[in-house]
Length: 95
Image 1 (cartoon, rainbow, N blue to C red):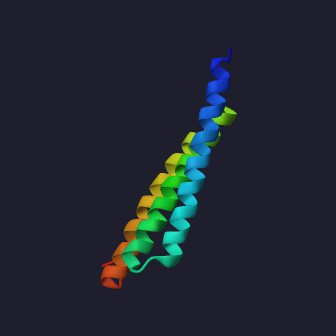
Image 2: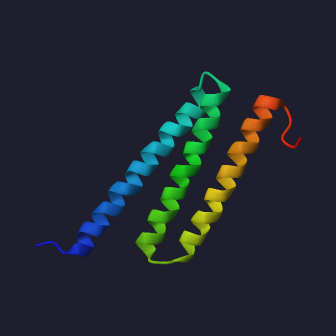
């Protein structure tokens, strides 16, 4: 009979694999994206996938500092996505 720890290990491996596959697909969309909007969305998705990987790593290692790091990544990802979108749309970030 398997224990709950083994199920958690399997779930972490599955989650990390799914996030890695999503990251690869986002990189492909970043390279092949037909428009600039697709590329910006791919970059934003890559930030979200990296955020998920950091959280899964924090769960796996049992260290709480990774959750604080994930908050910083989320804030920087949001601000950079907004800044890049404004630059593409208007040609200037700060008005």
